[in-house]
Image (cartoon, rainbow, N blue to C red; front, top):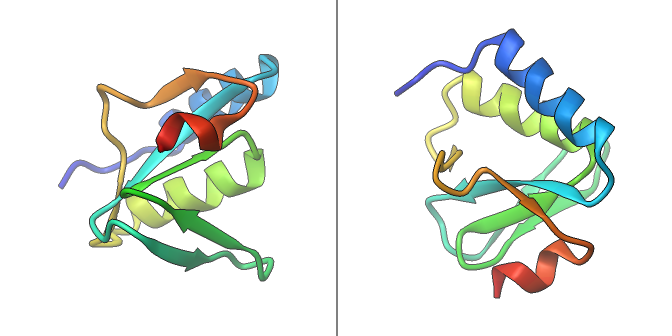
Amino acid sequence: MPVITQEQIDTVIKAVAAKEGLVVIFRNSMPNCRYPLKNGQDCIFQNGKYATDSVAEIKELMEEIGAGNPHLFLDTNELVLTSVTPVLNLC
């Protein structure tokens, strides 16, 4: 499994922070599930996908992937989307 470096995390976060409407798509091997974040909120994966423009969520999920979480991953063919309503793109 590829390792995500801090430099890669920083690059994605800077790109999202710099452009409004840009979201990162996270994938999960479990099609429909909730992933609890440290702040108590849940990431709700639908059809194995979760889109977010939150820098804090992106950082936490990328760190989880980098730490070897067996269910979370990024698909390099579908990493970032420009959208105002990210949830609608996932259905």
